[in-house]
Length: 456
View 1 (tube, rainbow, N blue to C red):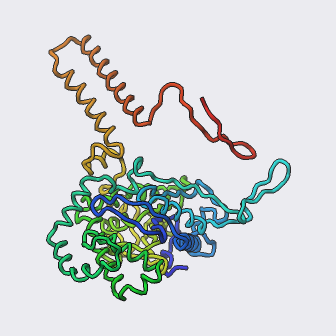
View 2: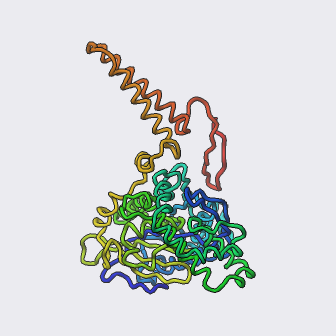
View 3: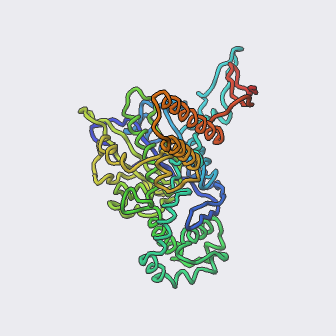
C-alpha cells in the first residue's frame, strides 16, 4: 500500500494530488518555446495510470486504511466531494486520457451504481457499474494555471540565456564525445545539448517499445541521456528567485493548490479530494520553489511517468491548526515517501503554507501577461487593447481647457459611455459576450435521461 505511516495523533481531512500522465508515444518539444507536437497514450500508459488510481484508492479511500478520508464516498463518486483537473494543452489528449484511466482505478465500477426507474426496473451502469467522473480539461488558451510557460516571453528569454551561459556550454563540452556518438540511435535528430529533452525522450520511448533498439543501445546510454535531460529541464524550469521566469510552471499552479488546501480545512466545503493531472514541468518548478529538491536531490529533474505528489491535510487530535504533509511517489516502481517541504521535515501548518506560497503564485491573466511580457497571446491582446482604449479617452479629456461643472458632468458621462462601449466590443470580439439572436445548445435533464435542444 504505502510505506508512509499516518501523521501521529491526527486525522486526515483531505488531499491535493498532482499526477503525471502514463507512458505515451513519441513526442517533440521546441527546445526554446516548448511548443509541443501531438502524441498519444499507450496501453502501458493507461495501465500505469489505472494502477496509480488504485493505489491512491487503497491509501485514501479504503475504510481499513489509517489514512482513509472518511468524508469522501468510496463506493459511488459524489461530484461535490472530488475535483478533477487535467491539462488540455501540451501533450494533447495524453494527460486527459491518463486522468480517465486514473479515475477508473480510483473509483472502480460497482453494481451499486444503479437506478430504479418509474416502471420498477433496475438499471446498472455498463461494464459492471462503470462510473463516469467529471474532468475539467484546462485549455491553456483560456486558463494559464496548468501550463504557465506557453507563450511566456520572459520564460523564452530566460531559456535562451541558460543555453548561452558559460555553465551550459561547459556541460556541453564535457559531454561532447557522448553526444557525438548518438547519431546511429536518433534517426537524424540533432545531437546538441540544447535538444537534450528530445534526445532522451526518443531514446526512452524506443527503449520501452522497440526491441531491436533496446538491444542495440549500449548499456549506459539511456542513463547518461537521462542525466543530461534532467540537467537540461531543471535549468529551463527553475530559477534561483522563486518569482524568476524559470519557475513559471510552478507559479501558476500554486493558487489552485492553495485554494484546494484551504477548502479542505473548511468544514462546510464538501470537496476533500483534488486531483490535478499535469505534465512533468510544474513538478520541477514546485520542487525548486518549495525547497523539496534542495532537501532531497534525488527528486531533481524529470519525474517518471505516473508519478504522484500529494499534499495531505491533517487535523491534530489535540486541536489547533491543520497541517500539511508532502508525500511523493516517483513513478510506477516507487513507493510513497514523506519528504521535507518548505524547509521542514515535520508537517507544516496550513497558515505557514499559505503565507509562504501566496506571494509567489498567480494564475490571473493580467498578472501573467505582465510577468510574461506578453501583449498578444492567451487573452493578453484584449487586455492591452482595453487598457489602450482607456488611456486614449483619458488623454482626450485631459487635453481640454477648464470647463464648467455641468460640462464636466457631460464629459464624464461621455467618457464612461465610450469606455463601456469599447469594453463591450472587446468582450464580444473575444466571445465572452454576445448580442442579438444566437443559436446555442444546452443540456436539459429529465427523469429518464437527457437531450440536447436548440435554443433560438
